[in-house]
Picture 1 (tube, rainbow, N blue to C red):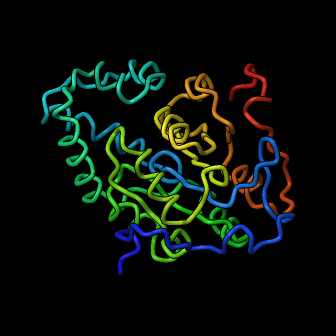
Picture 2 (spheres, rainbow, N blue to C red; picture 1 turned 90 degrees about the vertical axis):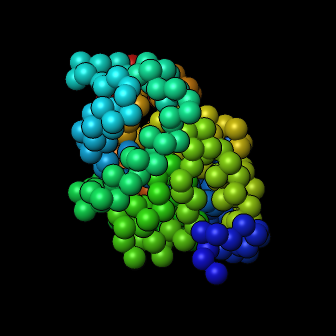
Amino acid sequence: MDPRRHRGPARLWPSISDRDETTMVTANHDRPFRLAVFDFDGTLADSFPWFVTELREVAAQWRFRSVSLDEDPWLRQLDAHAVLRRLGVPRWKVPLIATDLRQRMTRDIEHIRLFDGVAPMLDRLDGQGLGLAIASSNAAVNVERVLGARLCRTIPVRECGASISGKALRLRRLLRRCGMPPERAIYIGDEIRDIAAARKVGIAAGVVSWGYNDIRALRRERPDWVFHQVDEIADLLAGDGGPRRIVPASQQALCCID
């Protein structure tokens, strides 16, 4: 059976009671994370430059306003719904445009790469026995081709093709499939909607500063963790005595924005 199609509560990692609690990673209030769920585009994969270029052609085809270069910094302050309103995209066009973009990426997939350091970071987390998963709006075939066969085995649970407001549903499915309580999971993304999805499901919200939404916009949503470098993710979650102590977002000075 294709594990992406499975909806049952199969446990893909040992139950919480099967491990020594002292080896678990701790976050706010000493809460251990046993499952790390990642967004894909802008978090693991460096697809934003491709997206900006392709969006101009998509705008012409679907007849909505194209983004000018001077608008880009301003739009990165907004959530996805606000951006669509700004560009004059009616709701009925959104799933059609999303499908078109996924198909275009499939065509151009050889140009999409993981960010530097992502593969070693995932290997480090996997080596420490942390459960890994992906919840993405991108198509499964695109995610799998960029990850490659080896990393697909490292991240066995993937929920792809989420709608613009559908990530919370995907996260709930992931938790059921992994048999994981929400308080033991963290979702790491690069958009305001990723924080909202994590909040809706009751899991911790982590954000990266190298993705789509500007880090200042992300901080305004009060995520639990902010990551400025890829290896900081493993420093927090691996629990292997990594070199840095990562400070929760609530304790980071708002003036210290990269």
